[in-house]
Length: 111
Image (tube, rainbow, N blue to C red):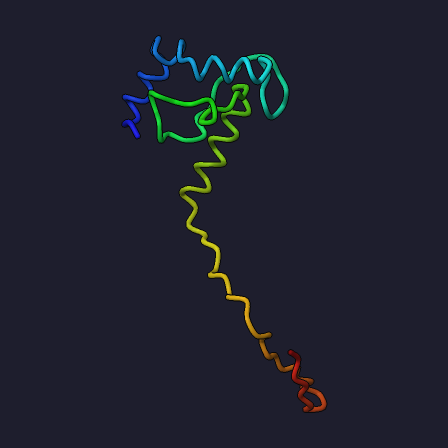
């Protein structure tokens, strides 16, 4: 991916404003935000930066300014979140659990 200052220059350049993939995505979206259906203040969001400067239509999504801000904030939050999902337990034999009644002292095995 380009550095943030180079990215900003690219987004403000004629190369981006006349980019065939960008123009095609705006046309395919019907000139509407793909999230809220508004027509005002449209932007084109990069879903991936893999082909930055040589984007394909599938790399892009038309969003209004407000939805673009919301999506970007959510993606940044996910990227920089310190919370991680616990590892997935492999599916196999059922796990054995014991139910213990502390008042009567009995145990029951559940598979």
